[in-house]
Length: 239
Image (cartoon, rainbow, N blue to C red):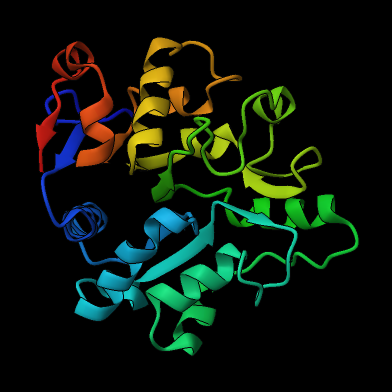
């Protein structure tokens, strides 16, 4: 689903970036109804403070959510580098609720490709919202620059042999109603500018795939390094 052209897609938080981002996400999830929603979340470092704020302030009913992972490393689910652990630890004070709501990936599976197929089936229905963060090399989820094989996959979820990670594919992005990309810090701001300048080169700049089809949330550090002509052309607005 393409973002409504009347909506501002490129948004900057002047202060309290985590708070503004959390409230924006909450509004997009429950914009019309409190019916059960299907979400895909990233577990990267950037979003930890956002999840923590959502948990502490109880700004949304997590029990009305069914949550899936955007990607995962081949580490145990209790490992510090595990996206599963990061989401459970920061979004859910009650860890039992988290384990019930968040669908884990069996990273210890002997056949990683079969596990990816299992998880792909969970993602085959429409997704209401996906939250990702932009990497400093312009990657999203575990779709990294040069991953041409991933771009051509027909499945919703695959095991990336090169990166040794599980990841959603662009098929999931096309099947998601609302996409939100977090851009935090100077390096991520430069990465966004690279995506803009190479907006047809999805393989080398994966984030560019969502340039015109997502809400982009910037902190001030990221926004300040982006060329003013780009911000003017894309109609950057403050949250």
